[in-house]
Image (tube, rainbow, N blue to C red; front, side, top):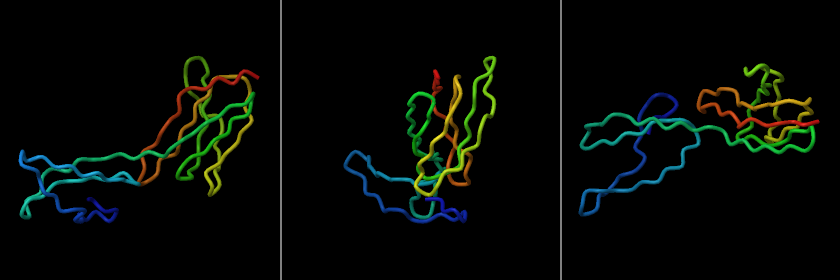
Length: 128
């Protein structure tokens, strides 16, 4: 596994079955890369992008939800078919957020982090 400092570390020693196949399940918490090595000969890295988990709920004109891990959010509003920045939300350590929005079509994006890919929600319609 590629570490944040740019060094490779041994994550696991693998043993293949009779047909040469193996399985390794990893739970990446940050974007990283993995590679296989045999007797000090390393193969090409395979990048794995990890994005924050974003859950949303609307109730009238109130948007609420959580982002894990807690990161600042950008609310964008669709205007004439284009997405325009509307509001930046500061999210507390719990990851919970709440915002009051005007009538319109919105989407929520996480800000880019050094170790996480950004994510954008599907469009949401606020009808009040």
